[in-house]
View 1 (cartoon, helix red, strand yellow):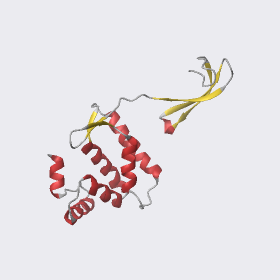
View 2 (spheres, rainbow, N blue to C red):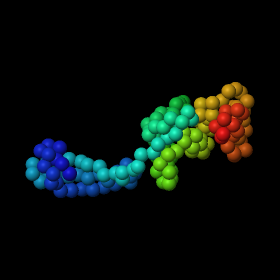
View 3 (cartoon, one colour):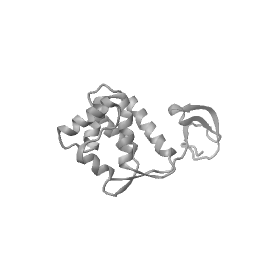
View 4 (cartoon, rainbow, N blue to C red):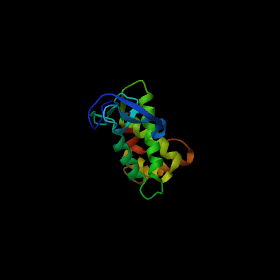
Length: 164
């Protein structure tokens, strides 16, 4: 590891501990040349996931974009940002564990709805209204009925378009 002070490449590890909920290792190091102390983080390198959008466009999975969508859906619901971070962590982990490096935005949306269903009905309906492109009150009613029946709601033409 290169020293940030003198760029010497030899250092010794003074201390190691788990960080980021066990997803990385934090190491305190000391340069063997100038004795400058610095911190490094070691993480498992993941293969990038490509998201296939509804229009066929492809983009790299963006964790912050997913979190932003969740934050918008959960505004004024009292859900803590830390809880939403955990939802994004769970979804990202599920995507990394899949065999395929491509995932449709529809699959990600369904994963989000599955997670929101368990933590906030209001956030679930808000997210579903954008994700499933609700066209009217009947779509909201169908979503609410689905919540009470404990099954994924079907919402008019928007749902049929997403399935096909």
